[in-house]
Image (cartoon, rainbow, N blue to C red; front, top):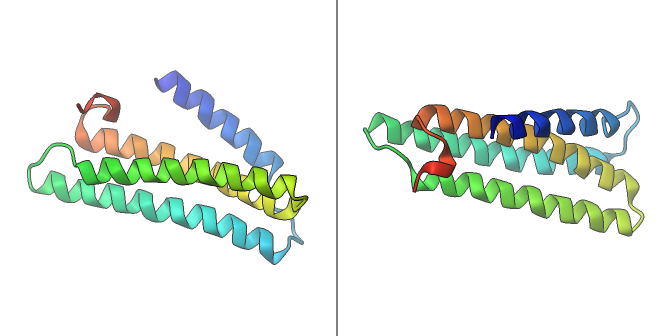
Length: 128
């Protein structure tokens, strides 16, 4: 599992390098990057925050934090579909902005997954 996460992280970093913002990018590309990144960041912070509240009360695994992380993964999948739709519609700037936002969102979700596993004490895929 950790090897897969390392490969995913390296792949995302390479994709982010190719999709990185330039000096003179359009406002639509900035908004596309912010929309994908901020949604993922808010969900990750909420999941980690709620799990820390559960740890403070002595509970083990929070179903809410697991649900929030799954919603974050679903939003990343929806952003991939949106990026493909904008690419098909020949809106290259927006598609590249969403693609860069997806790269940042995947890095955020990897960090979130690591934090949640550390806080819970076992991998999240073994909670049931």
